[in-house]
Image (cartoon, rainbow, N blue to C red; front, top):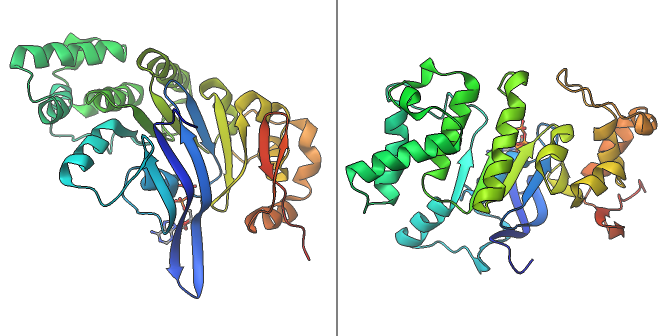
Length: 302
Ligand SMILES: Nc1ncnc2c1ncn2[C@@H]1O[C@H](COP(=O)(O)OP(=O)(O)OP(=O)(O)O)[C@@H](O)[C@H]1O
């Protein structure tokens, strides 16, 4: 925990009326470490994007704290906010929506450099753009003059990653970075994120509904349902020996045509879907540990 760059400490975000609160995120704690990837896995509506928005400071927590380099985030002055925004970058699900169709790729990469590295002259900036494009394994000369619509989905996502890297971040939050891409290019993007993490010692939060991909990208995993983290630990450990019934349900089958992950070990869970969802959506009780993974024991129906 001590070398965490960014941490959530018992954070909750509540929507809705006071008499009928919706806990989009409930009592969530985790830490992001340099050179490590944490996967946040959960189905639609489990609270993943709200967690990302809390990290990006689009939301402030209703309970708990977000800590950056060990310091709680306050309202912050403009300078502190700018420093935070360059340290913590986001890569979005839809690379097309996050790029401006009227500007070239060169413009997209020069802009953050102009804003965050004011000391660079034109030639240095151009060299930095080339370096960024090479880092994401694109041909700089060919790509720089192009507009977003002239690129493939995979290339566009590489540009989004290059743009995030332009400000020398320490943390990258990647929210479903491959879900809108063709299956054939997904692996390449995941490999790229892996390389970035290792080479630049980035702390990566990989958000996905697809538990099967977590193993390729992440060192650690958290499984989220109804705003709560129900199980967490080293990724192999959690996927090989899941303890929470909801993790087992996710592993047994999620109706997703792109998945071929169908774990027969947990076929029993499929017959108990509603029961498991009900148990898992209540505030979870005592934390338990099995080997390296941690999980909540669901509160049984009274
Ligand atoms: N601004 C909001 N106002 C009211 N309820 C919200 C708001 N944002 C999210 N919620 C609710 O909070 C819960 C978590 O939503 P969130 O978008 O974080 O889930 P998610 O796991 O990211 O889902 P998806 O993968 O579909 O984006 C959902 O029940 C959602 O309806």
